[in-house]
Image (cartoon, rainbow, N blue to C red; front, side):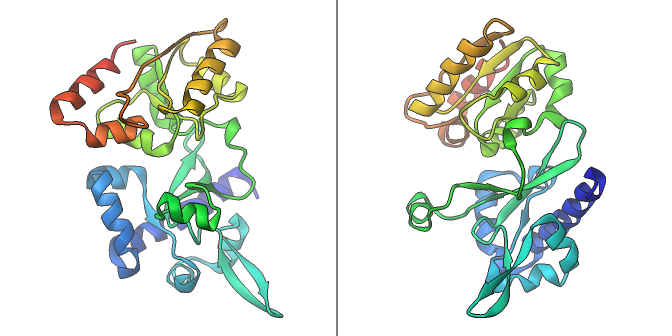
Length: 260
């Protein structure tokens, strides 16, 4: 499958999942969650959709061609008790959105689970799930939108998760990208290095995040100026910080991120 065909098929899935999110009762919980986190105008900008669980998969297959869904790995046939059952790749990660390369082509879908941490541990699933075959270390989430702002401001803000990215953009911070983890890979660094030599690391307030900042400075400090910004100790990441602080403190946090 060519990159163009893959991007087209992913876009079709996103469009249909957006329809389900906006119109179907099965997406009520996802809508409530999303409305509590992201303003409605940004929900459309980020192309959020709802991918049904296996019980309700017919909601999607009635809108998207099953063969096309199978081509992307979004659904697949699973043998159960001698029979075959259609299974969704994002069965437990129903809130989905596109992952685009620097040119705006969709290279993957990302699913975000609506389960809390206790349920995630019980099911042994992670918070996010990507389409089959994606090596996320080769790409930078949000770079397609952020690159012009990175050039204008001559620095990039690097966060861990996609929700951290969404929160920053909603707060008016546009020169931001997400790694999808706590480690800046060599490929990600040099993709960003094309646009600026100035990196502001804003990783999570935990051991993994602080270790990721230290590694970035150690391995890439000779090729760029890498600084870190601290978050209030009581919050685990920039997403939680921006959603929970009062208006005055939120403004302070945002202003602190606008200057390198």
